[in-house]
Length: 271
Image (tube, rainbow, N blue to C red; front, top):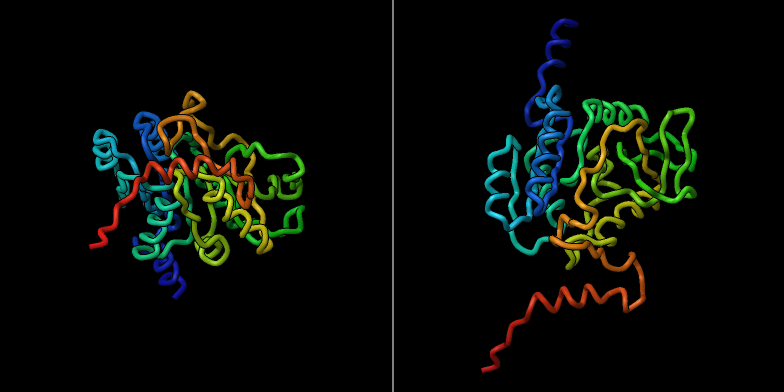
């Protein structure tokens, strides 16, 4: 019986990957390809346990051709005006329809990865998910990149060798059990912009209000690619993420108004 149980544990259905990775991208084909190739190289020893979903909102035919040539398990193409939140939500919905995964990892298209990046995320998530941090909140989401957040919103966890943080979770790398995403983080809040504070910030506030915080792994396990500082994944120019969440300053909403204006209008036929 013991031998039979070991055999069963070694054979896992392809429908039950350990992790589903969502690679969200728009524009910047050379940068995206470099990032994706780095990701594939880093996870190659574990590729059999991972499903990759590319969600691309590019209108560039060359970029789409490259996306279709990759080894991604699934591809979502929305080459029109699509927000980053919508791209992510579409990918997560596909995952829920198609796979029964343990972990969900959401990435953007401008990072490179160390070979220990993936196994480290899995290791720390398995060891620390639900563990109480120095903030007296439980660890819920994990990432292995610099966050550049204020000192008062982060604390060194000496016992566990990580850094706990509140709010400010960068959208370009979030790793969490799928159960945590569904019950706590729930979805990305889409709006009219390509990317915004409201889209990326809502999840982190829900995370905190439900009693969880984030965990930053030690070591330089991933790092940003050089994008000349002002290139935006979502607008093709300098990024304007709009007003901070819950701001009532009308001037900060000018980018919203301009974006809505560019969308145009239709004339109702009253006859």
